[in-house]
Image (cartoon, rainbow, N blue to C red; front, side):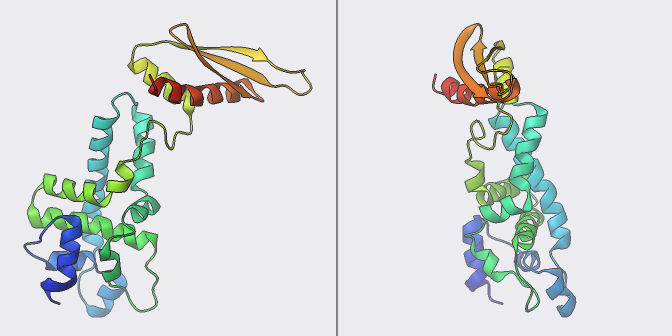
Length: 224
């Protein structure tokens, strides 16, 4: 295997040049291939890379979203580091074409995500520097880390608004109005921040109306 072919391509796209490129080769080697060839697989590197990936993403979220609480940050981190998300983030990287598996084994999202973590681990072992591995994590997840988590993948809009306003030392309250008869109820929730009316939301329950009002409020407050 010559360093002047696919290894250089991989190094270019992850923005790191290996001193010991055998570490990269190991990071690309699935256990199925390793067992047949009697060589080491990526599993130990993956173990290390997984820890680094979680730490780097945690650090990024903590610095980027100072108004979010621990529970919300944990949900976003879980979204970013799950196998499908990691595989999607790196789907255009050339290293996927060079993962070594036994013939007939499909290289699906779990393997792609594992190899991504193994590469991170290999970079750390080769460089001995956390900041270098951190740079590779940001390179691999560059697309997904650009997501605006203030507006995207928010499933509990009310909790988000309450957390954001609490961080800004503002008070939020709702008023409720029944829109129709008891046989077919519908509700309107008006959302106020520091007693200032922001917007209304509608739903078949008070909770649903509050969620819809909160979703609208996210966009209105961000425009200010």
